[in-house]
Amino acid sequence: MKRIEVKLSLPVVAPLLDLIKAAAGDLGGQLAAPQHLQDLDEELRTAWQADLLGGQNDDCRRFLALFDRDFFSSGTVSFDEDNAESVLRACAAIRLRLRGRELKSLPDEAIESGGVDVTHLNEALTKAFMCYVFLATLQELIIQHLDSAILEG
Amino acid sequence: MTMASARTGVAPASRTETELALEGLWRVVVLNDPVNLMSYVVLVFRKVLGFDEPTARRHMLEVHEQGRSVVWIGVREKAEAYVFTLQQWHLTARLEPDEKD
Image (cartoon, rainbow over all chains, first blue to last red; front, side, top):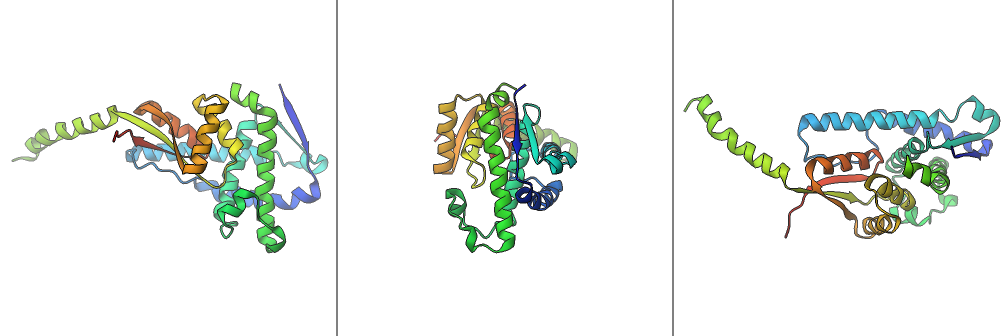
């Protein structure tokens, strides 16, 4: 089984985890992405949303479990074909949440082009943006190294 | 007219309309979002829809540049399954009837 271990800088990442956990917690009862389900009847729509929400919550739980006591002693997280899909989806969900709440004031063009100048952001925005970038970096790492395992899984 | 006879007269017609609507072809449409990474969207298209890399990339760029892409057309049940799975991956996906111009 292919596995990647990523050594993270504890002084950089540890302060971000509170906000990441809070954003994941906010998601507890809501879907991260807006969904258009008007073509479904009410019964199916309710079951559909519940299933999506259950999956989203499971993914976030699995992702946050990576940052356990071992992580705080070693600074290392591991990704493999068992957790890669959950982590990718959890990162997407939390990024959507951060974008919709904490980073709402930033223009889409700046975020999409990477043109955000963090020296002009206040402390809260800077932290949220760092979380947003950190989660994207984890996604890129997984896609770069585990895409075959994900596509074959 | 009694309630029973009214129901007998109306219900089959509306059921036929519903059946016809569900029987037609349906589109799976993915809408742009400013958050998900291009590489992530390409991976999801390959994983969920079975696209090869160039096809996945072409649809990703269509979403990015035109705001939406029709990624699949077919029967309702399978279209629903694709929309659900794309939504599990947090893409903004929707079901649309395939109405020809």
